[in-house]
Length: 256
Image (cartoon, rainbow, N blue to C red; front, side):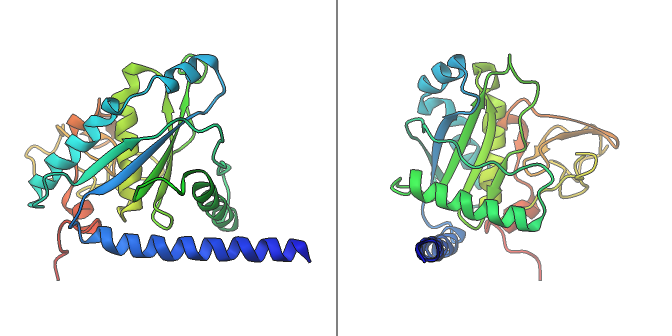
């Protein structure tokens, strides 16, 4: 009986959170006020060096995210002086649930529910529209980190990042990519090859010659060097929001 009550209470809580998230998504799609992004750093690997790095983070290390949105909003004619505000919160002791590789649809749905409950429990009081949980790892101990995720339903993301100042720029690149997922943007790269898809995944699809590209479309995540080669940009200075992404997040109206 008590198990049924607990499950019912959890479902009720998630339903309320979903309702508020839906209302927030509708409001943010209008882009008539600044979108607040909360960054919650987490020591993702438990290493002392990672913990020290996380404890020393400051809001200035995420300033390139705000500058990127200002620049790109202006490029698409969005009349906002400050499209987003990034707020850094104290590190969390708890670790978000992880989506296991190869999880099917039921597994992804279950993870999404657990993630939304985690966000409500550990970050629900934060004054923010979007909550990003950034799990840092010591680059000396890992060669690669799991794939980051952004959820439009829930307005939250899980970013796997590296605990090193030299990685700050690329960490911001991943954070923005996942933030845009929460706002409705889709991936624009080939899932099998990771190559940008033409034309929506190209930073300058009308450039002649087409290759090499100078910029990455942020939702493709890579600069197309040739038809079969792409490189990861050094940071947000080498990325742009393309027309299709701008349509998806409400900056432009799609053609009829």
